[in-house]
Length: 273
Length: 107
Image (cartoon, rainbow over all chains, first blue to last red; front, side, top):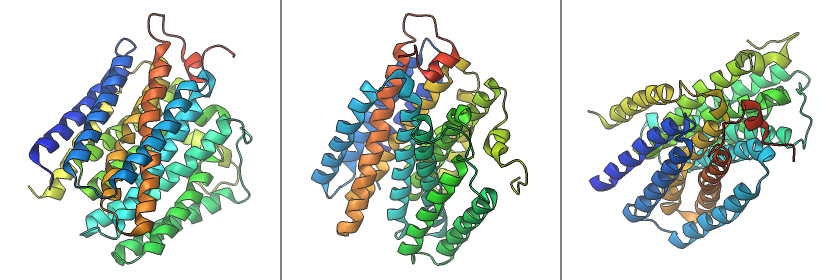
């Protein structure tokens, strides 16, 4: 159990995240809101290093340094026009990280609820990862921006989704057993993510990025539940909820409905819906 | 209260908070808000650091370290890119939504 002062600090950081989102909702306060969020994240990281008795400390610090050395220059130098796809990429790696964290915790989940949350996180995290990579490729025009409907796409999507659920259920029933089952679940999740985004046309991609952003938020929240960390739970849930409503607002601003964006390309002989 | 119920309570209340807090955003801020929210879920870095710090064996440590690198990219890169996006709001009239989404100017 981590000390009370650390838990209170985490709570403060979570409150700052709420204020950061609030600030980002208005032009005058947006920049301050973003900085507040960054500051809260920094404080939370320092507290984490102090209160958890961590092994592999040198390696962890080195890994963070690598992340900063790649992330900061890329984020600073990217052209204004390329920002949406960079956000998509950052969102994807976040989803991937959440999936990996849950995967590592799967074998040590004490009861069925955390195990179920871990299984869901592996699936959703890998969907967010591969989906975001496809949105990046589309916006960067490394692949066609037109909707791609693979032959039998809807059927393939439905089957992959069913396999994901079945694998999740198998893991849940056979608790603690399946390291390989977990890896398989992640792999099928990656396929689902690709099939999910392929049919979306170029102009609608930002809306799907927002939706995947909400997915990653939920994955982070679930992994916070698994490791019993309230900050991850609150931060992830905030993004999950605000990302969902933001997706709807963005679709409305373009005069589109989310359903028609996601399934528009499936129209005609579709089994989806 | 049972700890797992306490966490569930927090989860449900956070859903409503997240919903309410962005429900009145102007359309010029859709993209920066998405980017800022994206940076916030980079806080998964806390989780990645904790599980890596308690990992056993080279395989688990390797997976954990990959998660740490990915989460750092999300957290640090996310906040930096959001700040750059918002630079163009400072002092000037907010540009139209399409300009924000597509970037300013034609390069």
